Image (cartoon, rainbow, N blue to C red; front, top):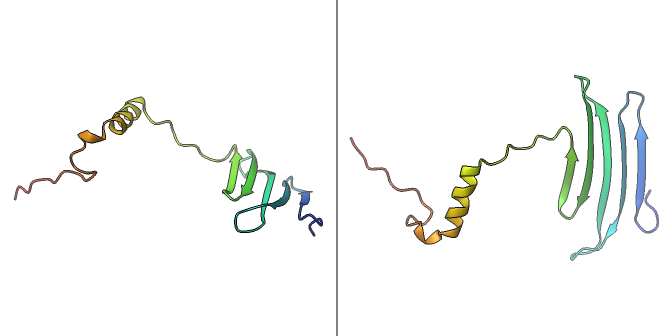
Length: 106
């Protein structure tokens, strides 16, 4: 079980190469004590790729970082410029954030 102060630590490695470790501790929070943890795990995927993660888990949730987590492509420069322009010129948005109506041509 946990130590008297609420902290803990564990680790293991299986025969097939899966390994994990974690340590945690009690952390003060606005609504009483909470737990924060950090750790890592690794394994070999069926395609032979070595997968590894590190993580923190606390009041902000589970936050993994690893080589198998997809990352989105960067936002194109033209889109970034348009977003920055729109943010700097809100008075030019006459629609109030709604798309302009499309006229009916029946």
